[in-house]
Length: 520
Image (cartoon, one colour):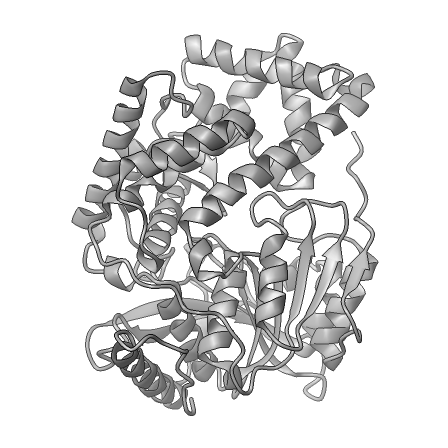
């Protein structure tokens, strides 16, 4: 879920009969229509299949990876109405035909992330996925609205990345009014540029798209790997299509509780980010011989606050203010792999090398494609979170909750609030989240989670574990990197392999020691 907004750069933060979810009386007719529409679309696409070709040259996906398209209804309540095309790609299993167990479909999160790089885990010979790739085709896709799949936009991409942006932490009521104006204008821009798509940019629709992709692949049942928001997509898919699922691994889990989607999820994220930020500061202090940023957490924090104050008064290099600093430094509480690079740049700045920090944190206005991708990712993030659930429309609620949180958890609170505030004035319908639960036919699901995860707090994995009967939870104790299955930890890696290759799960939940702590 690492994305950016109109106001700041921040983190937030995935044929046959169709099983409709449990529904309230007033929502059931619409869901029944959408369930029928999904079955129609899946049957149609199963007949058509996918016309696999070499990928377009500018997609950066080389042979033997192949690309294709799957058509899905914009609105599943009208399956014969307007269709949109979803980009998909694949690489065949590396073992024999006898080894093959079907396709493994991947979503990396966001919402707004592209899964199209997934097959490169095979071409790049990622050792963690060698065994699984012998048995499965690796399939990625751009979800609706993302990348090559009917992409949406809310602002001009070059305007989106221009710097510097206002300090996310408001000092005055005027600062809050300015940020509220930016959020309202961003929501209006989404409506103006992508209005026809917005009512249909929901997680349940993306789950229906996933089932159409399953059918297009010729698979009776789906094998799925979802990370971050991809876990919520998986949870909704498992609820809507329990009998269509074969195996599912969800890694770094969004709490699927209806009350959590999405306003509370972002408030809870602020608390978790503060905890992981402190973990990083403790590590920096313990490695003072390498970084010279102080021997205590308090000393490191003091240097961070001085850096923020300096950048607020005079943006570094004229382009890096507090918002850009958050955009750069937030990767440390997100991913352990960023601990050394972020600390190294911070250390250089304190030693007098300002340019290193400017180079790392400033937006690159010359990167036209990258900026368009960032703007699109942010647009989808906002569109899905705003459409999935009803948000508070009363500014007093936002102001009260974020002012209170900011007192104890200041690292991300206000930056996260401004990123999500467009949902308060969203110009399209906001839906009621699916009640994630076990329906008949749901197979055992493997859940993987670290206890110190900042973007998706640990409680999310516990909540999904309770909702999905016969699921197993692997806990990485004392670790906090987001996306556990991509890290070297044999206790986890071997269990993921055993589940995907043999359907094996431990008889009870498992707690693993943390993966190796980064070394300077």
